[in-house]
Length: 213
Image (tube, rainbow, N blue to C red; front, side, top):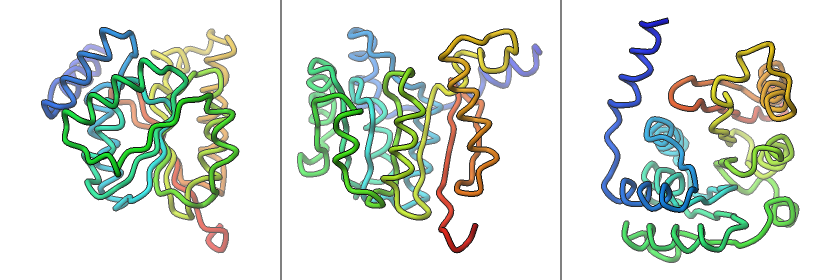
């Protein structure tokens, strides 16, 4: 266990975060917006870069940390980010301005994701990041899988729920939802799923074209 903890700590500390994202993180902490860790941010940046993503949806803006990481990985992408908290969106706008992200590359939507997502075009996005209220994670992932193109990817950080999903004694609704999401997607022929345990955890779900299932 000591070795595993040392490896986890090293992975967390090894990530170098761009200054613009560091500033956004500090602002997020002040707001209580709970940003993703730098190690998870680096992972999503690599995924967007490898995907050559051009159209990205983010469910849960926070103060802009995850959005900046997404665009850091794919400098040509356009990000649509959704949040119900105007204060968080305002902080994200400031972070994007400081990072010199052109206004045309970011679209901010104020509203409940459950209301906004059904109106968005299916199979139109390369990446969907789900980092909103955990109680709705399964619903949001279902929307995400509908929104991404064939071969597109849905990313779900915090999916380990602070380690609770690995504890068989924990059976509260939130932990059970995350556990079900992991188990069901791992066995689904519709997606390729991978679970990273770095940082707070990251579930990666890439859709499989119908003719390849």
